Length: 116
Image (cartoon, rainbow, N blue to C red; front, top):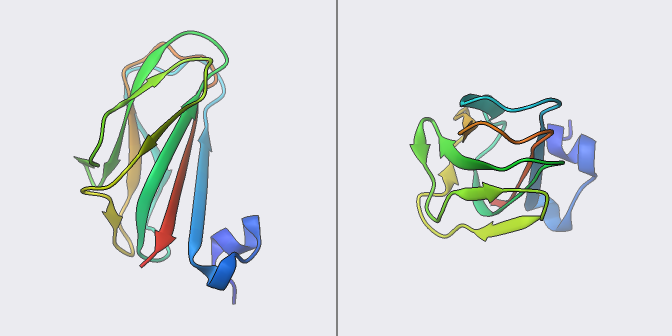
């Protein structure tokens, strides 16, 4: 049976690359938003990308409540990518959330990574 990501995105090179996208319709408020609940497999986050329709916000990506390495995103209508090199390993069944400060309209976060 293919993994959920392979069903959505198709198999990647040796099924090693992964990607998840979170989109919120409306204006984000200051709180946590789940991106992945109980990860179906372990993976290492290599990059996160953010953008919104309007407004500005700060987004912090967390694994089971702990912020991943690298800076928080300054979310705006310009696409922003942050390379992740530390505290970025997600184990099977862990949650990945984004903590928004509030203010972005229609924010989007994409997580790119490699299966472990």
